[in-house]
Length: 379
Image (cartoon, rainbow, N blue to C red; front, side, top):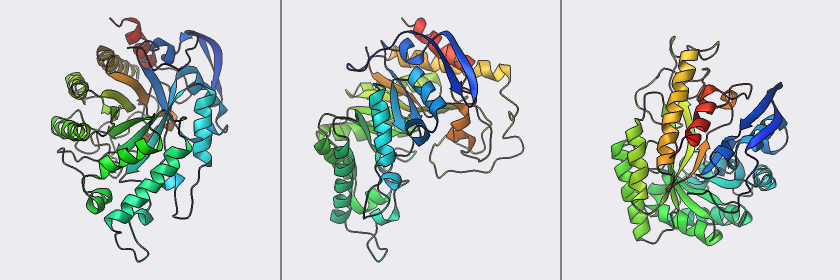
């Protein structure tokens, strides 16, 4: 499947120099990620404000050279863009959208409705008590109308609802669900579609590779589609580990949603290479843990054997994505370089992690070559 029409392609070979973290990095006749996958799906990165406002010019150059899609880490989340009832802070989001437009990228909006990073005032009255259903629906509607409406025709797709499921596949008892009811998800999609009828609308979730949660996710999307809710794609976050998930789980998860008639995006891809500090593989941001003496073994750099293991795992993963190229529309990494990854501080703070394709200086790792190589050998 060819990637979305309207995204401008670039030369397959880059003859340029990227300055990353203060160091020069010549890319000598190196194929860019976005060009390696131009006939298959978008390759994206999650970026913060420093990339789009000009303060990290070196990082921005790397993003422009390698990726054709962007997602904002935080600048479109409710607490950043609508921190008080009285007003919005659109400036960082404006810079983000302008950056994507200048560089002819597929622009994603992340995210409209989430239980986390949403101010308390959204759910409470002036006495600190939970608001009524109709009040919260009104606040949701007005927020979505303002944010999606401002970027109507400019943002290509929106993560409308983020992480609505528990690990067992049941609906999370968030403030949204408790006050509005189970139909808050359908309402969010209704309001987003009303604000921009041409934008793609997504449901985004982690750990859908685990069968109980996958079954719950499939049932949720089936019900929404039966109600006529315009779900264009399901986002598999892809916060993976070296020992989870198995490739068969990824394969089965993509196939399960494709069978419903929706597309699939890999929306927040990274690979935690460090020892586990807690049980399970949840990417719930509230699930912090304490790191032990053996939880941060690679402070001096990732050894060659681990670099190769990471490369092999990424290659296997992209072979699964390529197998499902008719369903997968986008693969977005959650971050650009290892230095900026959230996994340096999650689930335990202060660790030195190596989850992405570019190292702390912005240089491509063996995993980068493995991912490009997977595209070259795609059947």
